[in-house]
Amino acid sequence: MKLFAGSASFDLARHVASILRLKLGNIEHHLFPDGEQRVMLKESVVDEDVVIIQSTGMPTDRNYIELFLLLDAATRNGAKSVTAVIPYVGYSRQDHVFRTGEARSLEVMINFIETAGATRMIGFDFHSIKLPELFTIPVTHLSALPLFAATIKQNGWLDNETVLVSPDMGGLRRLGILADMLSGMAMTSVEKNRDLATGSIGASGVHGEVKRRCLIVDDMISSGRTIVQAAEILSQNGAEEIYVFATHPVFSEDAEKILQESVARRVFVTDTIVVSENKRFEKLEILSVADFIAQAL
Image (cartoon, rainbow, N blue to C red; front, side, top):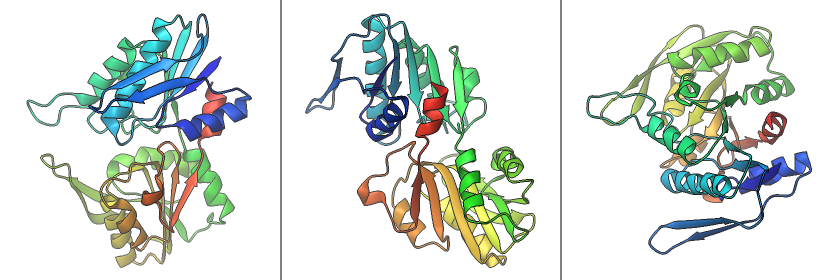
């Protein structure tokens, strides 16, 4: 096996390589002044099982293009198989057509992944459970929920004063899986409304019992506004301690600022997306998914 890191996932790939006792493959990556990219694999991959780790968070389009070029380079240079490890799948919220005239953007990205040469795909906590169905190649759907369960247990939050909270009704399936890992912990949800034209989301109410300690669980944090609004509603309904768990730290706009200023005590995320120094904040704690990737390979 030969393991290569895209520029969006270098630290994560290095961690995976360390676990597997592999050396990261050498890549030459050049970004031209006009924004075009060139990649070159600096070692032979003939008849090798190649693994490319590249997340597709911001800048999403640039990271996708780099991924496509790396996949093509491996395929074009004789790799026996090419596994695309895409910890965070960009465009995953555009998994279907919301309004007439729109493109099905996620399907377009998936077509490019396959056309570029991927023979297998590995990812984490897909926004849509139907995402694997859009691929024709094998897909391994990993989850950070076991990491979250372990963190909850380590903090001693397995008690009758704690409830798991989904910031929307669509996350209840994910929440149920985590609840089962925690001996059937209680669950509730916050009602969420989405503006189809702008994509903006707002929280409007709670379905279920609010307990003293609330653990909000979601697949990603983008602008952070949904999480902050959910935390505010929970606080207004009696929650005294609020913690947030989300796999993918997209952190668009001023997410780090509003999360730090929110009523949430801590925000747990993973390293599926690199959180740059200017996006880090005091309440943030980053957990690593490297072990899960290593096991899947």
